[in-house]
Length: 205
Image (cartoon, rainbow, N blue to C red; front, side, top):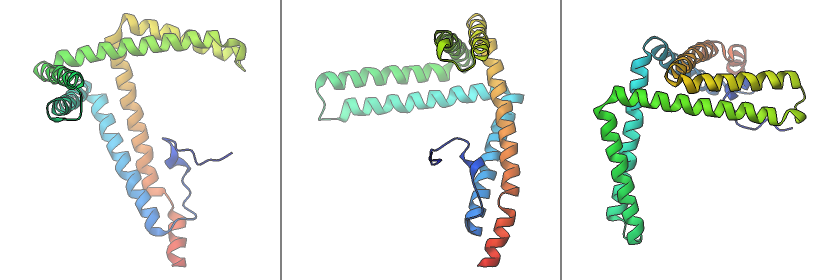
């Protein structure tokens, strides 16, 4: 079976034995930068969750504004489209721009709305996932674990539906903790990756 499939954890399977010293240094720099970024973002999320959530809202508002202006530009200046398509682009662009302006005008309210929306969305996904697991119990290799996972998923989903804001805050902080751990691991790997191999490659060269 081929191991060439890309993975978010691909850096953990890197082997420095066949790498030159310059490639090893490049990998180290990449690991160090990605680790530092993950660590900083994780610390901000854990210790300043409101600031991090507001920052995320700002990024979403900026993306809405850019997308809205793009649709407006297409609707106004594109000559190859039909009148109906151009009108739809303009209407959609105006909606996105207005949504971005409203988001910027009331960041705290928009952040709370997004948190509740995402909490409800995750809750629904977990309930559906738990119900799907129950429906596929006949194909499960371990029925006990499958039942446990299904019940846990459904209960967690119901809790999120009744307390979406609180649930989102908990999930957000858990995300921050995960980023801190991942960042520390990546930074350690940046210092330790390919030590012996790097010396051997330099000696060979």
